[in-house]
Length: 264
Ligand SMILES: Nc1ncnc2c1ncn2[C@@H]1O[C@H](COP(=O)(O)OP(=O)(O)OP(=O)(O)O)[C@@H](O)[C@H]1O
Image (cartoon, rainbow, N blue to C red; front, side, top):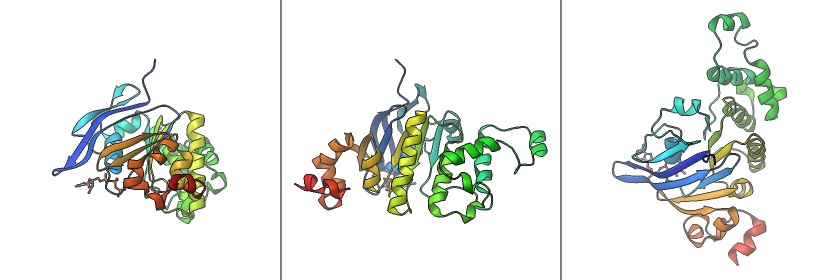
């Protein structure tokens, strides 16, 4: 049997005596959408930063498709097929939308400087592939526009297409819908989920919007003070008394349709 896409065991990190992450372990399968939620300061970003190599863990193991990636530098982790999006979208405002995606494709699959000069950068380097990625996220018509002119929701979709440029096996999304209007949030996550399931990409995301989490996650993990306190399908997590006590709270339950049963 092939190993899980991502296998994490006993992950730990302290900052000057503060245990930010304590013994976190989980698995993620290809095509699965897993949410990591928890109050501010619970350790979500620290977990993400260890998974993509930005922070070296004090303890624990991270395995990607069976390969030990613990402590590898971010670029090496990225090369192994781990994509990432950030709370604040990372794009180049002065470039066109297409050029942003071409840049990401070039970074993944460089072509020689001679060919580049021949193409003219803004010309044809990976252009067809860039356009296909933009079509995928619904930005095909905006390919020639300056990125700086895009509405924020479109910038987030562009960021998703950039994250897909290295053909990731695993996508780490740190609050992908932060700063977006509620309707746009659900749409972006729906798009992400569709693409991930079609391409068998495993997605791990953090999110404060519970509508987004409970509608799209296959499973949810709840982190509190650095430790996992619950893990399971949305219905199980929603009913977990400890989760309700530390995070969801009766007044914060995600969806009015379920409010009666949750608060009953
Ligand atoms: N570079 C750092 N130096 C010292 N302490 C840190 C550092 N980064 C995080 N911490 C602490 O580690 C704990 C976990 O922080 P982390 O940012 O991982 O939480 P989070 O769940 O992502 O929070 P948020 O939802 O607010 O983004 C917090 O107590 C935080 O203050």
